Length: 253
Length: 204
Image 1 (tube, each protein chain N blue to C red):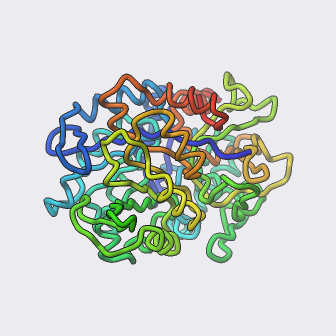
Image 2 (image 1 turned 30 degrees about the horizontal axis):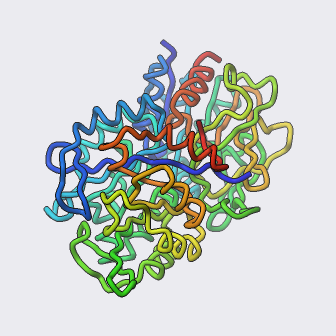
């Protein structure tokens, strides 16, 4: 039997509350993190992604006290990221209640961090988050520093390297699609899924349940993450799964 | 309130299981002191990460010997969770061979993908099919979903299998031998179903 696909709301934290932007910019406030977690907990969502998007640009460590407070109300799996630069940051987040830790900029700067984290805490809790920009000529490039810095790296090749170093999962975000409601980057997702054996979460661009079905069917993603659709429309993770079940996907309802 | 000693092997997230036990009406006590563990009336052994690192920590602190003594001497309810369940085996094949607690004979071996869509690690919600008489599954129907995150699984004698999961060719989702139980998934992260299972454990 195939593993159930997951629908994961993404919570982006900045300064004092949750935000959502377009193309990693133009941030709008969307509310309190604790409140959102309580609601998603009540609605039994599959899993949550919580990213502190100012930590890396501000050069600060993860806010462990804040994650501790949030995790105390979170009885579903939670991936936490933002500002993770060394194995102690990974251990610190796991200790306060994160189930998985997302690393992005620091892993690009020093890929060995993936290996150190996987050896110490197990591959299953190391999520490598890959932000991708597609250029006018169709070429895809990995960005670091919250989508601000081009790295010259190819996402497929970077995903392969991350897996070889011990990553347990890939969170693959299309920066260009982010917040646009125009659908996931399906070919990008498919290329990464075909290149690795670990689960891949598609992220960036979801505007409808049909978009989720597309990236699951044609992109072969193992999970879909979405933010704007849940913040700014009436659509919900549960209704998404009802739709996906009708489309023949194996979901948890 | 039911007191539960949660064993701190130093390698995992104890906060989630501690909070979940509290929410389920239990009174958790997190400790790495073998003397406290040996006096416990109910024990949970959680764990994530590497088998070898966890066994090394349990051996170094004397917790491994303490747990074996306690469970041989007294029939107290014991629950291993995820890596904590795997530590109950005779040995693990993860990164070479490592001896386990050997509470329920078995081997920890890699999961094998049997079809497309079964990626490794096995990460996400999946169905469980318990033995008909499984008290841990009280009020939880066959097919109940729990949250799994693992790359290895427990191979043991059929009589010790408490529940199975149908993916990856079918693997052991839970083991039980008398008062000693283990679950491969994370009840503390499995919302209502997970809390029901923990309440069932607290009621044993």
